[in-house]
Length: 115
Length: 108
Image (tube, rainbow over all chains, first blue to last red; front, side, top):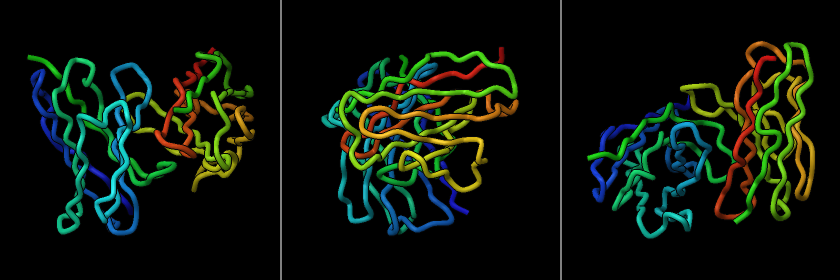
């Protein structure tokens, strides 16, 4: 059974870098694309970007200048870095499998940007 | 970027009722690459429909999707108590991938 689990700090200071990791079990990173999606409290979903095991990426233009998604196939993990965060980046961050529709999701992790 | 507009914002219905949710795209969705998700509080979204009308594994047949081009519909034929939730449409035919703002189906 495919499972995804996000991990990382729940609190980040303004202007600093948000770093999250998604650990995948029950599947190989080599087989699919892997995405990050976020949801501000009480609001809708926003696709952040995806990565393939080769390292090929596709980012949302609205965030492209501030994000890096990377993959570590030896650990079966992929990661998100979001730089220069502000209040607007406070959200639940989900990792998911795919570059199209998303069948498998992590449970999500709330990241709050606050000093 | 393809903007998806969902309507209504909130749908108040009774168990056993029929729910019709609309998703309108600002431009044609490529190859009918349109999905629907259900989300309950504190949970990740759950895939219901992909490719406009294909039900995901384990999804009951009371959920159905239809549409093409810029107009898509999710229908829940007979609402069960567990169906009261927020529903999102999602297009994955062109980048950036985008989601609609959601429709909340609440108990009347």
